[in-house]
Image 1 (cartoon, rainbow, N blue to C red):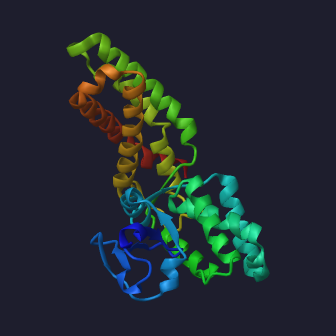
Image 2 (cartoon, helix red, strand yellow):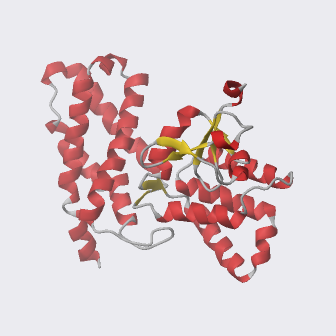
Image 3 (cartoon, one colour):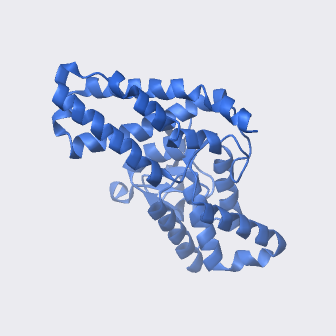
Length: 289
């Protein structure tokens, strides 16, 4: 029976629990996010019992990307403005916290700002209010918001919400490069494309990310210069570009699936072009000011 009842849960203050047998609180275990090992938990049973169920496959990405990740995506300007307006309103009129419709929207947007997808954020918020409506001793909203804000405040770098505008440019360039690789074979030379890619980098999502993180705005409380941003710019770049390349190879250039070394080297050369281009960004930003 213990095996049948085994499950993983995400509490509403965003801690991960393993319950090998729900009938015995002594069997609960909490994930230590630093060691990534489950440790015995004997504290608040309600926190575990009334939590959001997750699949074991979700644990690693949730912990590494969201709970411990230093990078997250910004929401649209409209959604960020809505969050700010809600917070300003509740500071003057605390009764708004009793309006489920507004609070549901607020929690969903804030959970997305942590790094969860829209569908996952909606599902978490729905499950929370379901428990609440049914009268279960679920974590209070203020404690949930406090945990969300702690996570958001821990982010060191924010990615633009306008990736839908930048993706086609990067994708189009890569299509051209990969097409040339197939036709040229061993004669392929990235240097023929370097100048063009330098121009793209100067108006790319990486440049946008640099600009965003250079100015204080919600939720960016602490700005960073180019030197401090560089590791994060590269981390975001590698993640996004690897996804684009993998999608292109899978759907458009399957013959390159057997050339991982070429793809790795190509991304390395493109990243080097980005690095050379970045040298001008901070100086240009100073000149504008």
